Image 1 (cartoon, helix red, strand yellow):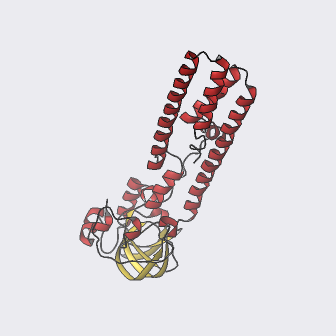
Image 2 (tube, rainbow, N blue to C red):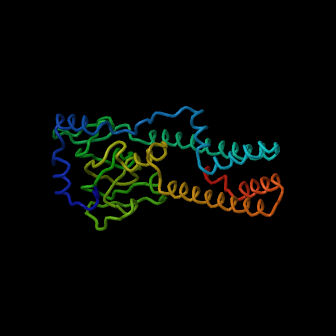
Image 3 (tube, rainbow, N blue to C red):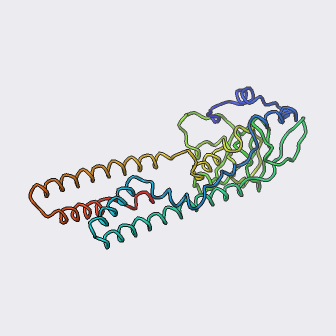
Length: 287
């Protein structure tokens, strides 16, 4: 949902919000439907399984095949060198994945512990994990934004969004609807995002997304190594597989040509293995 494109009347209608805040009974029902407003701890894979997964890439399997072939023809040195290259890259990939999991925990620590809301017509301070879509939240300088919020009223309100967008400067907010469906997060000036920091002024807004549905939650899903695969990962995997198949085809042609020319079999095999190992960018999976 492009919340930044909606006016205040549309927001209130879609979210089932009220001008004096949600009734507690309605908030409790929504909490059951949407779940707690917190980043979920994804069940971690065992460390040994993480390490073994580093060897599942197609290019790495080709290199392992080359190592086995080199071993079968008696070239122990080449076998050990290839295995060393593969293991080193697996260690690099494992370390990067481990760091990503720690980054998810860092995102959890950035979440606001409490939030000021309108409930039953009164201003209350509640644990931020109990926020639900449609809640009216009051924010002021010095607070962490507790959820993704569409702003209704602003008074010189600015937020620091470096943790989400990388923008180092404070972003000045407003409450008017915007135009443009493809607008980047940093340009959605009528939104305040979970995990960012209010640096100036005060504001009132409606909670539109909570928990893992927030922009910060989407980042946590990517970092957790769950089922979501980034576009870059898809392109790199597809490229690596196509490149490996191309290299194998070239090696097959070289093998056939040299074999038909009457070259010694061991020499041909060593040549093909050398070309495969040299041509395959074994560091690509780790990158």
